[in-house]
Image (cartoon, rainbow, N blue to C red; front, side, top):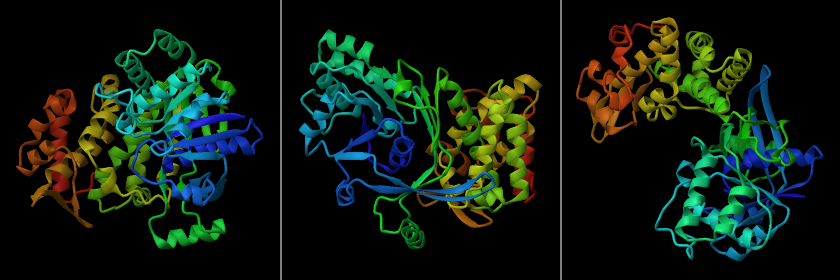
Length: 458
């Protein structure tokens, strides 16, 4: 028996980590038992009790050249605990000898340190503070350490979590023996996760369809895409408890978690960010719509091949295979990925996801990458078209009006008809002066004028 403590009862962990542990059970590995703990006081866990902690994940999408719709029953969840009501039941898990893994998803804001947190508190203290108290219980019980796998989407998630725990050990003057135990016996493993989970169906038609293929009503049913990747830092003897290979999701134990993050950010997220403004201005509404548009499909594939993949890793073959899986995922007709939703905070996204590839291409070839420059031109043209309407910032497109949401300073800059030159040269926006890239400013200004006239750049 391998027991798992899971902080978080949401759709993602249930459709990702729990489905992975269920797959290991189904495949005959050591039996995995997941114990879910609600990390925040809001929300309810009544549906778990109602369904005896059983539920289904339905994987819907496009894989291996065809549509996939697979129903996956999940029965590996043993308990779902509300620690704000039954704290003793929660702390009793710390004394379980078979507890080997702790998984968490408390949102990006969940891994933080608050010097005002009191050791005697619980409801209002942070997740790392709660974890520190839990680990201290285990230490006092004379038990060994565990493998801690946060999946929160921040850089070096486990390293940052440990820094917080170390901070609470110091803040609360906990014994040095406990600090030594935490340093030597607990393994904080950085991770990267990748699976799009849309969760519980939002429309009656889909819900009725899922009920029919499951064979019963499931109030916890969650929908996800077939693709899944869990890259986990290889520490200690984690391979005893985390098995590599394809077990519903692809699991990789690695000493280079940075490669997998770089690959995901540049290939998957970078493609999204480069595509969305062009898709919006060409009249499309979803990522799927874009992939059915021959011009946009070619734009995505050519940008990946020529301007992104060569700068991710020396292993071009592996990155290309991942890129092919990305374009398959973009073709998922079930995800209904709205371009307007993805366009949130596009300026900072372009800086984080596209500028590194853009810069690498420029350094190698001595010129700006033509396709990413087109994508960037559509981005600037989109923002240059914004108008302030009451307290919103709106853009009129072929398919009607959309609302842009971003840093207020950026939106007001363009709403006030300020020049493109000043925005591209603003180091506080981009981290560098983009006009230093020879030919970029002139090309973008020319492209924006063409776009305003209705000329397609693709």
